[in-house]
Image (tube, rainbow, N blue to C red; front, side, top):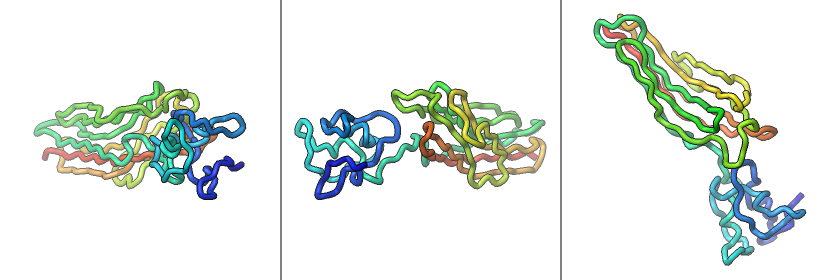
Length: 219
């Protein structure tokens, strides 16, 4: 059902993106069925402003409250970023030399992306990015996640959620390569890890980051 509010003959439903998740904008004073339009449309923080629509609150046009139609994106802060890990085995080291990049979607509403190298005389485990995946006011039990990988190549892809799994429990995924430390071997892969996040009953929003890994022996 249309909102009934119009600008230049166009209903607001065709001017602003619908609310999906996260915080709502301040009340606009405009209502449909007793519900303020700020609970009908996406907060402007998720998108961009459109032109003024001629309805004002406190001297401000309500187009400053909601995301313009087609502009809202719920991608996570790591979307479009790139992370890498490399391991060059030290001379006379034995065993395997491995490198990995992984993401943990934690059950406390946070995420962390790690770069790790193990073996070949090198060992480190560093958090290279972290933040919140859970929108303010929401519950982790409302959300599911699924991981996928693009351009896997020579990498091994570990994945706790190949199909949608509840974020009431921590879910993780990562790419890695490994070679014998005492060898002339070299392996590398430039992949993308895709995080499909959805609220119960909603459509998934996909956030992706590039993950490059390499490992080489010392001989």
